[in-house]
Length: 336
Image (cartoon, rainbow, N blue to C red; front, side, top):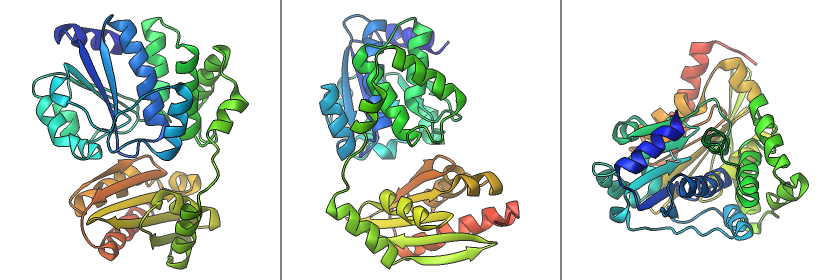
């Protein structure tokens, strides 16, 4: 029923221009799902102009993929000229940075549609006309593929490659994929996707600055052991997500890495599958969301991968994250 509802809203708005908006530093799942969705929308409504927007630009890896796909994203757009807007792989308006307030105002005039595999923030959900959200899916690209199926269209070779790339990225090269993910991947391969070539596109040499950030995070790391679980807390000014992954690879069960730039706090949280399964703690819901509220911003994400943005002091932020994790462990009473 999702495709029929999208078509209905496009007709209701007599849409000539659609904006597809992705979060800041948009990752491959965000840009690739938006790119493929743009192609589907053009099929659903002939003559529709679609503009792809990544607030403050896509990530470095995403830029490389987009160059290969010959796809163009802008980092700013005339939101007030849009007849319909889509939030793709973006669960709250603050992730749009300066565009967020403008999108909120425009949503009172034109339809706003969410396509995501993260739970939408209540404020964002309240102003949306349609929410196509599948929290049990491992990527937004899987949702877009199923929209193609529902509409009776096959993705083009480049759209198929984009969907495969986004899925592979968000599932860590399919290491955390669900059964349905493999069905979709097989369908994309049948459309011509070269698996080994696609995975090579996702592999990039680590820059010196990222290596230094990871090592600094280790240098500044503080360890807490709670019920047999090892929680690593640290801070670096950039590459927080990469640093958090590095701390997990060293042996931590949970990693929280914060950073501060221009008075803005950014926090990345990661945990092992074992930690999530045995404790029941969902980093996005149980830690990142209340942490975002604590620092005057927003947070959310997946069970094992989440983030929060706001303002405040690094140490206070890390202490609050630790407190939230400890509260979750007390509720679950699970030990390693």
